[in-house]
Length: 483
Image 1 (spheres, rainbow, N blue to C red):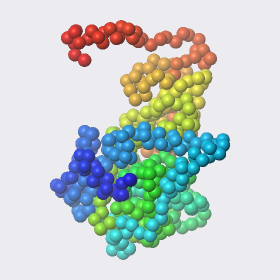
Image 2 (image 1 turned 180 degrees about the vertical axis):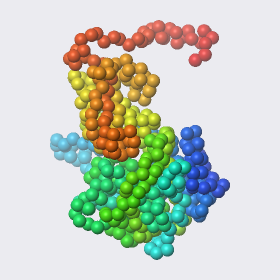
Image 3 (image 1 turned 120 degrees about the vertical axis):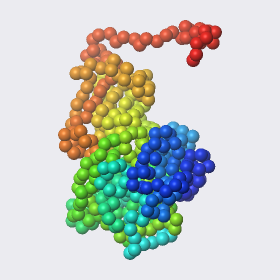
Image 4 (image 1 turned 45 degrees about the horizontal axis):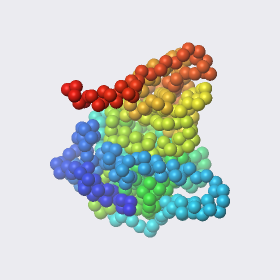
């Protein structure tokens, strides 16, 4: 069975020795970050701060800060199990006969069971505030010394496409301006920003927004998954948790939120209002600069009687977001392979902070195929932001960065094999020539063929023969040498 809610997962973490309760009073202003940063880098546990300064509400952080906790959240032994499930669903072929059609029925019925289910009420409605509330009642973090203020860092921000009515769930940081307003950091290419633009084009004055904080771990993760814009994140969360996400109508706006949420903020964004947001210590390891962003007006707060505030920090890698990104990389690899079957594996090193570096290995079968993959990946959703993309041969282990550097650098002639293109770049790329637009570099680090204009012989890699290796393996223990 899927986790019922956040506290059900906390219980599981505690049972697995993956949670540490902090009873000492700790300030959400900077101190929680410093403690969490040290613990995350040491591969330590999730942290439940029971007495955050200035609030009676406990704070959970580093919930998914190791691969083991990601696996616990997804209820698998390894991420490949999730990838295999996705592969089994996206690998549908048209049934050829009656028997094939009958075999598909159970899978089709299971797909139907993943859709979100609307319920009348839920735990998130135990306490409802429409008048007397303040965002400062919650232990919202100021993460780094030069941050522009306190930021809600793991909100599930829910909006609807004003033209189609389809829901989107995204995670966008929210700087708290005062007791009832925050910024809404909708970067240009995000779906929330697109809903904002479409509503404004239609002449509407505002757009309804709901924010859920703290839910079962898979629903929390769903907000950062790169699902297509027409696929409901809550439906995909239902697929991952094997049970539908129960959704409950909001009190003051036309949206639904997860019924098991710890805290819900309801309100709207005025399409003609913006304020200066930032700076913010970001996942790049640098402060993202100030900018003008829409303002979220909170009209109602609902929460459980004893809510837990879920948050996270980003900053110099690796942080918790790296482990979430790694999970996304492994989970969605089958989808990428279905579109481009020559892809063998991909890797995004922590220091590449998602958009700065991707390494892709391919099984090359025709001239120019590496260049084709460069263009293909730059056309895939959030992968369009990849600043440096390196394509290597199928026999290179993309997760062994020493091997990648060695073999890639030995395989390239820089003038011939480096390709520069212009296009959209991540808003947080502070080195780009202008916000949201700049250059990207693709490197064809595969072996070069005569059919690609390479006329010289390509040398063989130095490898000891298997017979000699076997003889030395048998002799090794008698040599007095350590392993």
